[in-house]
Length: 276
Image (cartoon, rainbow, N blue to C red; front, side):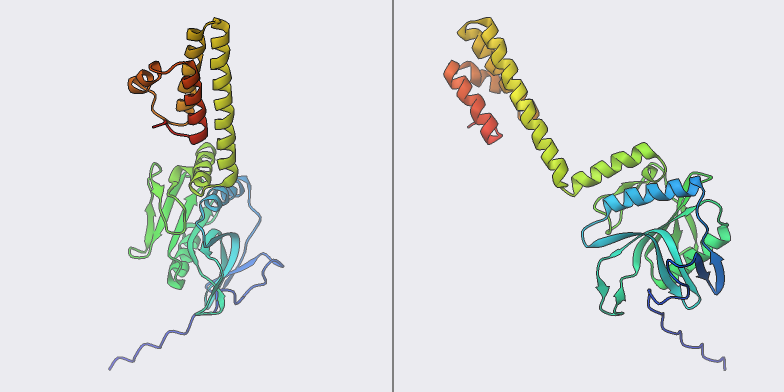
């Protein structure tokens, strides 16, 4: 009879160290000591960009980390470049949660090295690992089913429960795309500073439109000119507030006298809608 396979040993806690964090540059990969050297510009620049994009996209209840050491297995204790994990302590282990989404920037590392890391991370339970290959401009994801790297389309998106919205793959490589994605992520999160700035710009636009319309009316010097200025101001207000201002709305305004038209503008500005 074939001998029974030895039972697998329980995994160590993710924060149980084989190397000293923050006091050395050592990592352990399958029992082999590796020195994590400071990066040259190609790696360092791309790493910073990935941090920037992913941190902005991190959903509520999750934490983004850079160079976070993880006890990946009995003989492995190393960090991925960027990672996202659930916030807080995992009650099943009494340690921090394991990363769910991780990123590696690959510049000088060998394919064997990054593949060994991917295998160990997958075995440990890290759900997804994305690698950005600096020299070739490729972005790939490790497939635990096929045990190989799978290319991701540069015009595609990375969608994951840890992210507030899908991230354009190109944003991991292109600085301008990264900026656009970060802005869209902050909008999706309802960032209060952006909301405030948008409100301030709308208010400024409303004031400018009203003043321009009234000025045009005063310059005309007649009631008809003043009303035309108010109608112009209403048109500007509708544009800023994304309200309809077509033939139906303009026909309604034609039925109003000067005072009623001015009151109509005041209601649009106050209620942010077309009056009933």
